[in-house]
Amino acid sequence: MKHLIATLALALTSTSAFAVYQPGWERPVMKSDMRVISAEYGYENVEGVTLTLTRRDGANGYTGLIMETTEQADSTRVTTQHTVTLEVKGVSMDECGTTTIRAALPGQNPMGARTTVTLIDHSTSKCRDHSEHAWEAHVRTGFGWCGTGDATMDLEGDVEPVFTIMSRERGVE
Image (tube, rainbow, N blue to C red):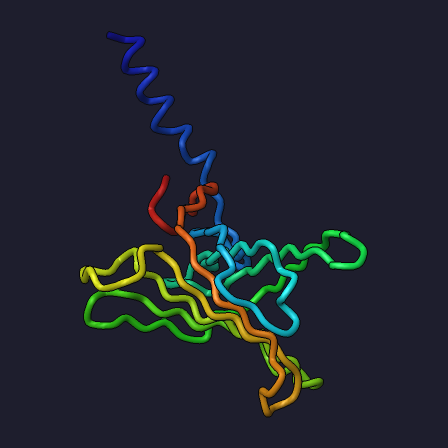
């Protein structure tokens, strides 16, 4: 009995060693390997896209979105990877519980560069009239202000949680 109590006390006190709180860290929380449904202009050669929603430690909701693309050039057959880090600009929920997350490049870009992702998360929907996939996304990238000739891409995929060291701020002690 003494050993059981000692083991239990050790287990309860040692879990705090796995808690990390870093206010500037964009902690990955949800991730999906997306399938490209349609792509035009600069996204024609994209073969794979991974979207990762992040939450800054101490924040109540999503604060960032990381888009990783893999593309292959037709002429050289060389595969390249690109990563774009976006800031969540708005989150809304409809009457069914479907969440729409709008993310864009952070701050003002003096060159007029724009990248936006509109992510529709059906994983919390109570209605049955949504896509068979948990996530749908529309990506738009361009320069200037008119939007003509922007590279666009439509994506779909299923989502899974990303497990990281938990934050003490979230109650894990």
